[in-house]
Amino acid sequence: MKNYTSSVPVERTIMQIEKVLSKYDVMRVAKEYKNGEVSALTFTVLNPVTNKELRVRLPANPAGVASALERQYKVTHTRKISDTALRTIQAQAARTAWKLMQDWLEVQLSLIEMEQAEFTEIFLPYFLVLKDTTYYQQLKQENFRALPEAKETK
Image (cartoon, rainbow, N blue to C red):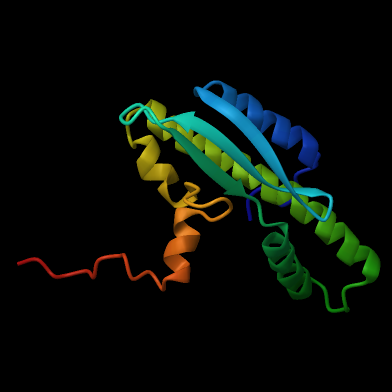
């Protein structure tokens, strides 16, 4: 698992993400909080084709990372996870989740910069279509009905 030993505080990683975004014509960056912790970053860019603002929501999922780290712990340790170990895993999970988002974002922006992909192509699932619903979440809620069925070509 990448970044599973990151010691970079979440706050510093988020600042680094904001710095990266500032180099790519991002107009605004906002933080979303859940239980006192940053749970997602939302940023706004101008669509060069339509000249309209697009909002992108990048969530981090520390709970998912913690679950993976706990599974890994159970494989390498024969004893039950102590409360202390569990707190350590949860703190590590937040650092790892945000470092993964930073790495992912930097790679995606590099692909755009090197003309390997377009902004919309990469960020489409993360576009906010409603106040707090991304395009991907909307598709999922509708059981992905809008996606075309794959057909064999001859």
